[in-house]
Picture 1 (tube, rainbow, N blue to C red):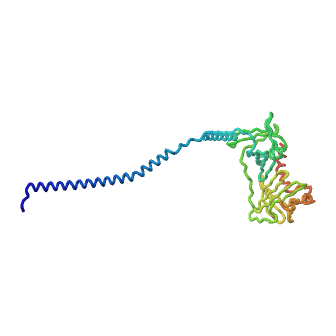
Picture 2: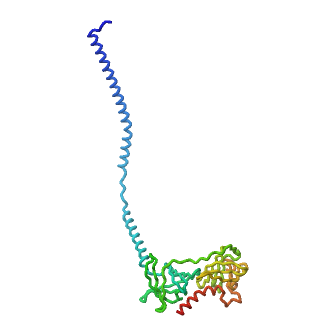
Picture 3: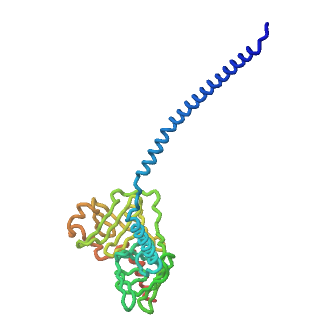
Length: 335
């Protein structure tokens, strides 16, 4: 092969160099095109976000700034005043109120615990075992001090007699005491307490007389005198309506006899004969009528007269009702 001359070599090197530079230029141009294309895509991709951000910013700028209501402060102040008033009232009730209402009081008379509840409407309820006494009371407050008067004798209180009283202690802590007196010779103290309910156990295997179950009333001269209620579970309530006395107890049936059991310091059983004739009940020697029946709607002369052989006699149950109170009064009189 013949060797190339210098001019030919120079020509080829120059051509190769130009070709190489051309390729680089083309590649560079292509890279720029790619970069330019990617940049355009990036710009296009970014443009909606920027527009959305701009729109959100514009909307936020367009939202009006909420102003605080002019009623907000007065409402807060009113709530604070109400709260202070409530706390003040509760504090007054707990530490400064020295009245007998809405407190359960108790004291012992002849080893028997009596409970007293005076209500804001002027009524009171006394409890002795399973016996309730319902009545009313009045208060006075003058230069001679505070007095309380009950319309019935119960526990340490005499019917219609005014007892002076004073109260010390706190309702909140449950240590109030009410000191009462009728005279220098007769003073007693009631203590704030929680009533212990005397509930008798219902009779076992009890089978009720369906003709007896319900409420019965004895009326005389258009007055409700007695009411007795027999329940299916063996519980029973005997009420002396004119005296406001209610006996809560249980009963069993032995042939034609109802054995009525109530509680004072111990269980007391009173046997009472009974007989049923439709809506009429012979009980305690009196003729009762079923509550709500046609017999009850009849005139008093037709149904309210006791049996002839019992018209002027107290029944066994009536004697039992008054026995405890009479014994307490007798002992107090002796003292």
